[in-house]
Image (cartoon, rainbow over all chains, first blue to last red; front, side):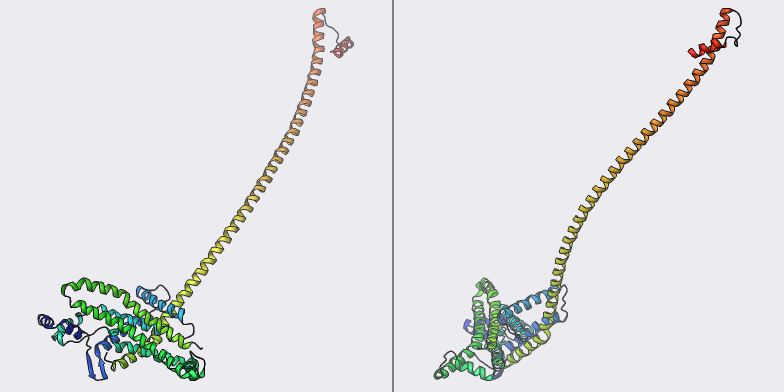
Length: 265
Length: 156
């Protein structure tokens, strides 16, 4: 630790922040994977599904246990949100919303893990110098992860638009809105495609921006020396708001976009 | 922002997780919740029904109680009337008996008096003769003076 601390001390705060914002990456160019983001994302997804699956397996309609109660509260909250927004019949949207909500919530919660804790533990376990350890444990602060999520939602928007309205209906929607005259159809198309693409982009960038900023501020506070403790506490307390809110917004907008895709104009 | 193949990895994970959730997580939990909701709804309906039943039973009990009171009152009334009748009858019988006993007594007394009178009459005759004998210091032929004696007896 003393060696690691000495190395840390030689880093300027700029280098320290940059170091912490670098992913653990394998591969070259586009064909590389951010092992930390993806690993934590998959791990947290598996944690979510393991807990919920274990409850689902022994779910009783009688008196539920405490864990089942907690899981049912989440499920009912998501179900109410879906039912208040989406009025069609679709077996995918509610489980999709549940997955999105809980998974993003868990990934956002990684923001509460102290920024140096994981590198320090790894250096203790492996004896590596902390300067060589790259670990960015908040998956939603990685645009790749949020783009991946929003991309999935985007494909579902396209899929349901075509499924409900047909290819012709979908194309008609792209060309004939918002202006009715045929001379304006090209302009309509440009506007509608921008609207369509803006949805997943806004969805992913909102989540990424919030969590990246949160992570960045934690790193800035971490460079302050002893004063960081109350500030860390304040910023973490503020994230009690940000973390569930961002998960909820992502879920709600997913539902809204998919219910828009189901609407026939 | 270094976009790379992580997007594809995340997309695959997303699809797998959503499918798993849709197939193995959501349906059993939802089924349990809905079954419980049905049970609770049934229970509430049953308790409503029970409350209504209770109300009905109470009304019925009140009505029966009222009826029983009326019946009891009528029974008591009848019993009182019956009692009065029995007392009256007994009193009547006693009166008759009393009169009969009185009548018997009177006759007996009358007979006894008559008998005593007869006896007295007979004895008065004897006493009269005895008295007369003493006065006259001689015997009187009862047969000779029987007409006087008879007259005397008749006067008594």
